[in-house]
Length: 221
Image 1 (cartoon, rainbow, N blue to C red):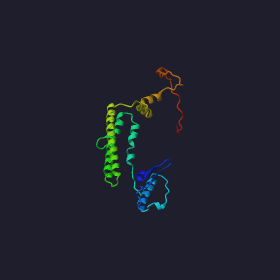
Image 2 (tube, rainbow, N blue to C red; image 1 turned 135 degrees about the vertical axis):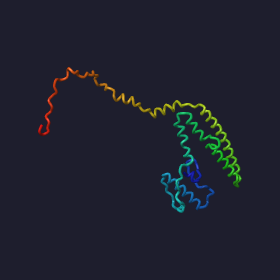
Image 3 (cartoon, rainbow, N blue to C red; image 1 turned 60 degrees about the vertical axis):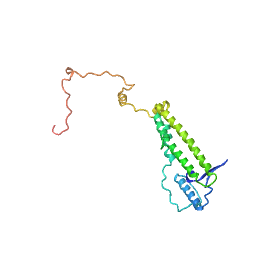
Image 4 (cartoon, rainbow, N blue to C red; image 1 turned 90 degrees about the horizontal axis):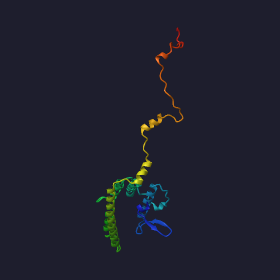
């Protein structure tokens, strides 16, 4: 969160922390950045204690920032992790490697654009950093082409992953057919004894007279 708020990470031998940018000397800007950082941390549920003198109470509360770009891409590793067919992984890799508007292509464009912007600053080391960014963008673009090629190889396979398919089958057991459930419900208990059906009595075996009727309780009868 502090990284997104604009703080600079510092990694020492025994400690790590974040600090304000070294050239940010305006107290108003400092308070604004600290206030934004505190708001972002509290919005994520962190319990933050801060000297009120470091905060700018005039800043409006932050609105709903929604998911970050990284979080919006979080479904890609999840879908790959649960994939049972090469097509599912190919779909995820396609989002990364699509020509023109793929994620990696946009990253390369962002790095090159940053290099052009950085190169226009006025310190002697700025051209060095700009050229370094262009070099990284060029390498990343080359890697993106390699990944795109491997994505094509995987697309040609078009097959199930044997281990993942079995895992998915084990996790989602098929429902027992209705006919099997009915047969099980009608099955004779193992402890029950088999019986022989008895034929209905013949007409000659019928009783000669009906048994006397039960006396009626109605009055007058």
